[in-house]
Length: 461
Image (cartoon, rainbow, N blue to C red; front, side, top):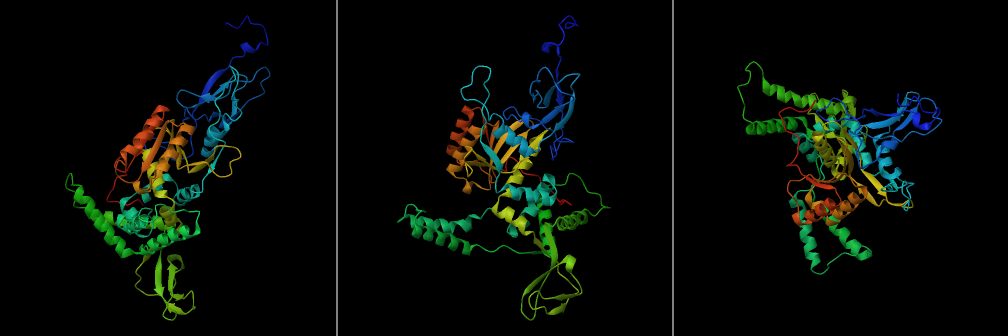
C-alpha cells in the first residue's frame, strides 16, 4: 500500500525478499541426524559456488548476490516476477575451492570506500597426492560409516596391523636406529644432504634399520582368526560385568562367534580380504595362491604348470587387499578415518569435508606452498586439521607450518589430531595456542583418550 502512489517503472518499487534454501548434502552426516545438510560457514564465503537461475530476465536492476543466512542456509533474493528456477549445487571440493581461492580474487588492494572486499586467501587449491588413497578406501568400502566400523574396530585393527597395515612402529624397533644416530652424532653433528658421501652414509643407516624389521604376515588362517576373536571377546567381557542374567534359551556365545563369519563375508564381498588356499608345488616348490572363486577339483602350478588335485580338507586363508595395506601403512588413512569419525560424533546437523589438499599462495607457484590433511565444516564451523599417527613423527616445523596455514585460511578451529594418547610437549604446543588465539582461531588437540569408538562383542557385518 505504501508504494501505491509511487511513479511507475521505478527501481525502488520492485519488491524483493530473501528466501532461505535448505539443501541436502550428498554425504554421510551426523550420526544423530537422518540427513546431511549444507550449513555454510561464516569465515569461508562459498555462496558464490551455488549457481542460481531466476525465471525471466531482470530489466531494471541486478538483485543482490546470494548470501549466508543466520542459520547457515543459502539465501537468494527473489521477487514475485522472478522466482528461482534452478540452483546448481557444487561438489564439496568446488565449494571449498571457491571459498579459499576464487572468492575475492578480483578484490582491489587499495579500493575506495564502498568497493572494499576481502581478498582471496590462496591462489589455487587442488587435491594432494594423498587424497587418492583416502578416496579409494571410501569407495572400496562404500562410505565413511562402513570404513569407520571396519578400520576402527579394535579387533580388526589389530588383524590389519599384523598383516602390515599400520604406520606406527614399536618403540623397540626404533631404538637401535636411535642408538646408531647417537653414536654417529659424536663425530658428525648434522648430515649434509647436498653431499654425495653423506647421503650415502644416511642411506646405509636407513637400509640397515629396514633389514631389522620383521616382514608382516602375508595371510592369516581362519582358525587363527577364530581363536583371536574368542580371546578378544573374553577380554571384553572381563571388563564389562553383566547387568543381569542372560536368557538361557539363547546361545549368546554362538551369536557373537557367528558375527566373525558375517564380517568376513562382507570383507570378502567388498574385496577388502580375499579368501583362498595356498599350496606348494611338489615339482618347483612355488607357493601358489588360489582364490575361492577360482578353486576347482584340479589345480595347476602357475610356474611349471604341473597339475595336482585339490585337498579335501582345506584350511582357509585370508589375505588383505594390497591397496588397503599400502594406504594404512604409508599414507595414514587410519588416522584420517579416526579424525572424521570423531568429527561425525560431535556434529549435530551437518558434516562436510574434503580429502587432503595442497595450496599455492601465488598464481605462478608450480609446487604446493602448503598442504592440509583435512578441511571440514561441522555445523557451520570451519575447521583445518593436521593429523599425525604418533607423537614421534610430529616435528616442530610441522607445527609452525600448521600455524602459518591456519593464520592464512582463518578457520574457526585449528585441530591437531595425534592418534596416540598423551598431551604432547606442553611447552611446544602452548606457543601455537597463543598465536592462534590472538588471531581469533581456536586451537584444539585431539587424542584417542578424548575419542575412540566403543568396542563390542559383535563385529560389523
